[in-house]
Image (cartoon, rainbow, N blue to C red):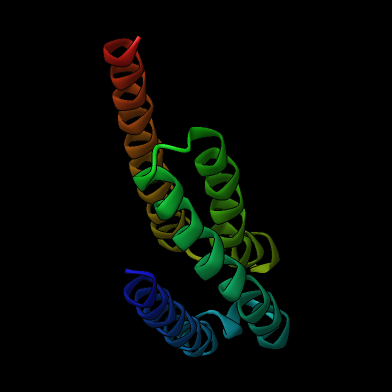
Length: 134
């Protein structure tokens, strides 16, 4: 089981790093003309991506084993590392079309809401299990 978890975490890490390079390429293609320093964005993306990969996988493990406090800690770190590059895009861009703000904010809101809902479900489940065992 430990080896399976290790391989899943490695695959997740690889996917997030791959996605970060896709995001950097997309930012270069679509956002550089709006004053985004692509090197600053790339640095933020490259620094935050491994943190995102590690914290999100730790959050999932904590949720799986009903470790609510750990899942909140790792979830918060996941949220910060997930949103850092997008916050840079939104604050550094000059003259971005409103649709760009809308899309980035919508993606951040949907991902954040889904995480909160999942966390609330786990907290409710944990509370139910605690009542049964008491």
